[in-house]
Amino acid sequence: MKTLPTLLVLASTLLLSSARAQVVLQNFSSTVGTTTFFHGTWEASGDPFGTNSPNINFVQGAGVYDFTGTTGLVPTNDANSKVEFFNGTAVSIGTNTFLSVSAQMLATNAATSFAVTLVDTGGKTAFSTFSAVDFVTGSYTTITGALTFQAGFVPASINSMIISGNQSGGSAQFNISFDNIAATSAIPEPGTYAALAGAVALGFAAWRRRRAPRNPARPNVT
Amino acid sequence: MYSRNHTLTHLALCCGLLGAPVPASAQPVNLVPTGALRFTINAGSAIAPVTTSFAISLLDTPQAAGATVARINAMTATTLTVTGANWIAGALATPSFPYAIRIITGAAVGATFPIGANTTDTLTFFSVDLTTFGLVTGTAGDSMRIIPVDTLNSLFGATTFLGGTNPTEADMITLSSSGTQLSYYYHTTLSRWVRTTGPTTDRGNIPIPLDGAISVTRKSAAMTLTFVGRVPDMRFSVAVPNSGPTYTHTGFPVDVSLGVMSLQTALPGWLSASTPGTADTLSVSIGAGWLSYFHNGAFWQRTTGPATNRDAIVIVAGTPILIFKRGTAAGASYFNRALPYSF
Image (cartoon, rainbow over all chains, first blue to last red; front, side, top):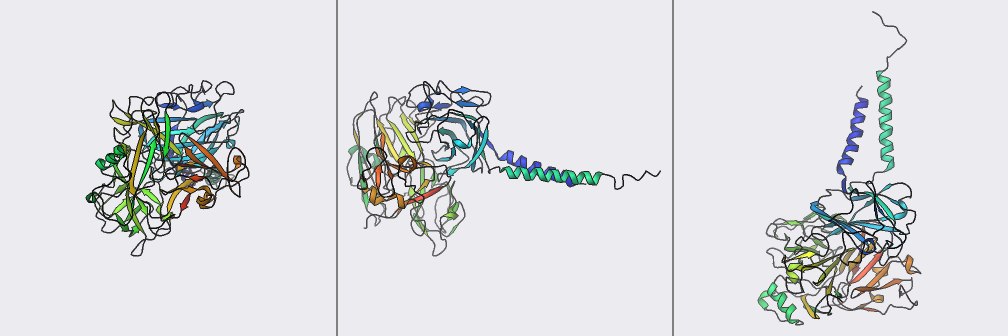
């Protein structure tokens, strides 16, 4: 009789612990602000130190932010084209060693990759590089990549996060829409969720069998 | 100049004395020669700033109490223990006077790790797994050396460069390390180092990267910087992420050609190709910019222009280099260079 509750508790514990381990670093619900600095072709003007004003083509959506534009000031994948989000108070990513990025490649994108870099308060870094082609066009896909840590990087003291075009002198058109960036503990394999769902289904079936009368045809004897 | 002694630091900086004599009492006795690197920082102005980039391959001598060269008695993934080291707890991980260790024997010779915390006999490190370096512990174990790491405050202080109330009028110092470049200037009203971007938080304790590069975007008259320190006496070893850029240097205060450095064989996983668009690249600093090369399978050539053999191109001592690895692979490989001279 305890099969279903046990499995459900197990599944929810796993899912909840996975959720607890994740640290959202940017949800793109209000991307532009005084602590966000755009550089290179990703900023509105040529201030060499970056500004709070993004490329005029960039669009804030509902919880998403489009790095878009095909005419006028076209954003490119130059490594010096970047956006840096500062944290008012240092953020900890705990023991997470992966970054997950939810994004989609816009139809006009020509950039092949981008990098997400975490900067600690001592200037040490950890980064993940993502292939643009992994983010399909038309829907948001979440891709998880292992962080490469610089020795001495302090995970408990994240001062800022940088998204950059990743190519030295790159001129390819950078058109990507971002939904979410988070630090995570592991790559959530689709098979993991399939296994969990299967276990829950099996448990539910077993529970149903045990709850059913042994001989439903036998009449009650009073 | 890697020195804990501010007086000595600024004496040499201000006077620009190559190999400036220093009192014997200020230097521990050692058998490794002290050398000097001298850089001319080109003149610029606020309207027309000029950038000069350089890298320092000399090291300082530790001034902290306790063992400075020691055999590793025990280790975990993030700690090393030296029995009887007699360090002062926390003294090797003070933000204003940070230290690192460099492995000096064994398979990982040259590997360098910043110290995150310390007790009297144990060092703790962040974001590194020491068990992956083949370190040997015990009575016949590997040895390490304590290395001081300078900061913006300790190396440059408040007056070496032109300060200002904004990055447009002040000299800008860019520290390039691993795959990131971060820029700073001395804010004369706040009396502290701050980032050129973002909040004006005090950044004076930002470490000067041992294996990275420094760029000075000058808005005043030309100046000379002279750095005095220990000459490297072992293999140079720097982690190069398997994707993206890495800002570093050639490891030693001597010139080396592209052909002799042989990055295509010294760095595991190097991608040679017939076209620059599909090859890993090596760029050599030229002030604010870079000259880029790729290895075509037979020799080094420029990423632009004719396919001339550039193996003989010399990277002058103290010149930063930029390694760019294609792809998105995580992790890092080690670029190791053997000691190119003997004592």
